[in-house]
Image (tube, rainbow, N blue to C red; front, side, top):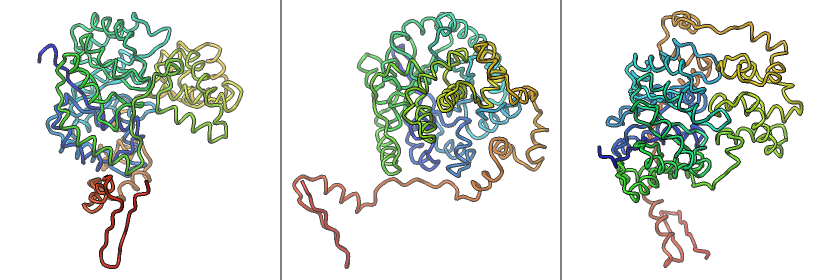
Length: 487
């Protein structure tokens, strides 16, 4: 590679549809574009994360393991990635189950893992990197970006040194809230390069504040040679930057984008057809939004927060809930607004607004947070007065007595069905009820998604676009349809 070459990691099939389509892309939809995307020259392609497993089974009635296998059969030239943070998002994750999750991902075709720790915690990174290496998956550490009084250059210098100490092949600067600005890139990236011990850095950012594409270009000027992008209509809005836009601008700035846009044009067309047919959102460039830097609630959570308030007929209090999120986050010790910490902050802010008496009601997750079970840093840095208010209740004392323990796999297997249960089934039973799994098994297997219009429909569509025609008539037997131009 030359010094001007820029590689691209595709996020369409994972972060793109997670950000914009609420993870509603079916396996058939993925298969309709997978083979074509494999020919675009991506450095890697994101496919799945732990959160997708529940969605696949509960709502799409699809087997997530079958999804990974079928996509891996179509994508043979490009390494597939898993986002390997928490598997069971809001619960304690025994290391044996995390290992089993990674083993099955490797067995079904996943080759790389972006490893997340919501606190950028060295001990957590180390455990997950070791597991990844043991199962044969390339580990990449996510350095999650945040804005707060404690997330200084010194903080990121120390965290970069810790990540580099694990000798991973790549560190990813991950900006899930789209909070990076070109100006912040100019101060942050050099600090990371000074402390990364020569390990390459990749950029993953979002377009929530409108600055994601600019940050990609700034990253190139600062020495980053790998950026994460998505194919429209699953780019922009709260998703990742548009691959066509970033590649075009990189070329204009004298860089050599190593991606074949011509291969991706029919993919964008296919996905747009799916979006229109299914009523899915189509990503669009957004205007700059300074409020995002204040509350930092991720895009997917904004709609959920509004929904929570609408259910209790307090939808008009949404702006107040965002202000409350700012206050709660500070009281919680400035956690990074990423899953699951962002949900803890957002749900508590909503409760405070709904009840009208701050912290009169709290969730079990927030109690565990105060106890330090969602990360020691959270319990240690929480405002002492707020912490006392959360823990001074019978439910908190009950949860405090239930100290989570690492459980051996043999015990988990005995608890979830015995030796006759496969590893993949065991993982599903850990995450879901047997009834949910049975309902998924009873559904039809994944089918190809055919989004092209029938020839007659396509012909009529083309004829209606001609300005020189006043009407179009189609007749067959006793059936006749006429379309008249009204303008």
